[in-house]
Image (cartoon, rainbow, N blue to C red; front, side):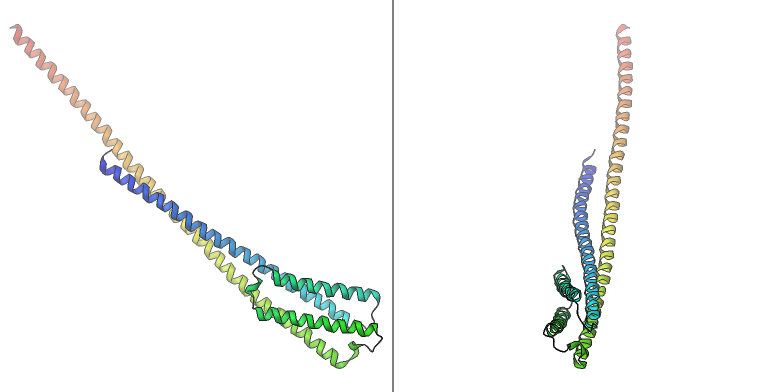
Length: 240
């Protein structure tokens, strides 16, 4: 193999190594971003699930408010719903990436739910003291309905924010997946081209080498034939 071909192969081999390294880096970054986007989509779906659960528990509390009297079972149900809604609210606020949601909406929702639970506490306390049920009070019902409506509104607002975040992350995930595929595909093509080019150079050099060997062998045979004829001629002249 001549020096020029060796330089070409070394050059393209180095390029192939650098490309393989760059492909690995870009692929890792793209896949890492893809995994991050998928994780965010998964967790934001968990936020939607918790919001729906909070809404359902609020509805259960709303049904509880319609009661004229409260039995022991009703009280236990109230305590259960009261605890559930606080647990769900806490889970919602602690879900990873939930801080991507507007914090003012989260705080407002938390404040409204706690205010609602305070009204529920007032109902139970007045019931235990045999005071006229607050639930029969027109002003109480008006305030309570207002709180319920506000809770539903804020839940829907947060759900809109979450759904927008999910859509954005899904688009980014698709983009990162395409980038990773393009980088891997393009890198594979370039690497394959370099390998084929190197093989072509090596094959061409081997063919030239074999051809040169054949020419040398032919020249050697011709030289041997000439030397043999010269030797014969010299011997013939010497004999004469």
